[in-house]
Image: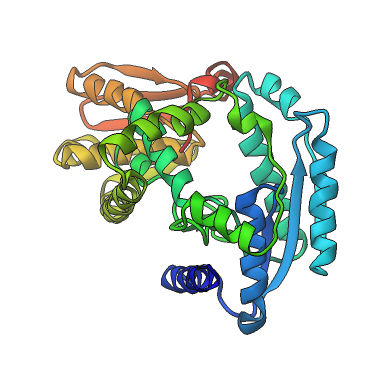
Length: 348
């Protein structure tokens, strides 16, 4: 078993090197919920920290969704103290945030976590925020994206490294050192090193779609393909590579055909219509993203169909408007409409 876990740290080290996740002499915020994944991550990073001169800082957000959630915060604080690591503990009323956003609890929790982690990272000048997502989490995400409908960008799922704010080059990097480590390996590592994690009962609830994917859909898929987690991870990597290529081609096309004029984006219609259909979708998606709106595939189809039908204008969720004339496609946003349509916008 010890040999197996030694192999795990070697693989995590190699994975970090491959994607430049943990450069030497850097400050890293480690998000620790107290569960097995984040506890394993923290332990592994501490073992790697001396050789890489990493300065680790533990961060824990109390979502206040359970009556005993403060026990998790105390547990993580005790773990950090035992490792002689600094820690920041925050609180967020996620249920209230979900009501205010008129959305789901899971999405509100995700936004609250990322906001908190960014605040911690910026306060200590950390360039990396390490999350404990595993290969199983990646497989679940791919299945969720398939169920909702997604192209290469969506099926790329979680990247090993990305900016916390995609469009902000000054934002800290999110890194996922365990993204090719299975949940079974994490559990084995915790047992081997005497790590006793906290267990969140909400992870067993059928209320959340991700839990149903984890508890029912993936086990069923494993009866057809025992290596489905690795297979879906490979799918995500291939889609990520293809998405990177499309991003590059979109940027090249954007420079040729689009012009930002104040709050309006003007796109040369004839040059747009000469693009491959895939790039047309990306150009429209990019225009919306600049305005702070994320459009789903069905909304992009609506825009493309409207252009082909020569409609005069089309409205999208988020208060977006595409106005069409013979020579130009003009994208703009009615900010007064954003609250009304906010729930209809998809995650970028």
